[in-house]
Length: 323
Image (tube, rainbow, N blue to C red; front, side):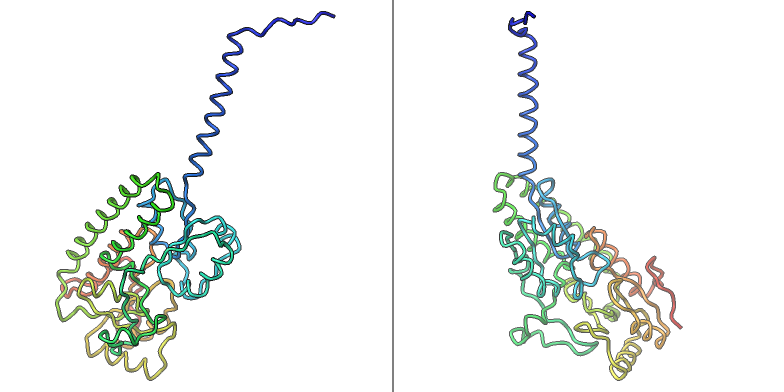
């Protein structure tokens, strides 16, 4: 048997080499792109909007507390813990969920860097039941666990958080700094537009009607930013007892309050009881929407419709009269 020992045709060899080099280049490019993507974890859905807007295609964001869950009591699933083990950054925001779980997250992933996005923000004291708040002039006397974590409900405070997020992303991936600066400017523009829109939406509310009754005291920063005052029913995760409930009902009547605002993440029994007693209604405000600008606009629109005396409260989130 005679074997053909002649060299391979040159054209075939060049095509083979070209194909191999092309495939190798594609593989290296894929590895480079994958390596450039930062695995990031956040506590609540609105943070995902902040990080994704700034980080763009360079971040893959995992939310630990789903939008329909209550951040005080939520426990991560095994799948979430497995995914968290691959996270390079964790952006904390001060919600109670983090107090119990952040130490465990650090133990499960020692290489993960935790960034406190509210480190530059002076947080308010959580108010007590309606009419009984902490003295805002005595902030140092308030225990850190009693600080109000709902800083994402004030656009000016979100701007401060955005700066922290931008800087942390640049530290983690300096080669993408230009894109992170661009994403920050995009978020800053969203914040400015949203701030103006909320001011416009709430401008028609009478100064004497700017107090509202809410189940969970989540809207302190929102109220302080836009000249409103919340009167919470629940505080520190506890519903009021019969005596406290009677006092809240009396205050609601004194202030001619006919609307009680609830959040979908919390129990609503006490709110409905008060609504029946004051012949009022229950409306929903959701502070945990992942689409943060849309969620904030919805909060402002619902409050404006309910508090403006010339407009009846007929929001799409209306739960109906409780007689």
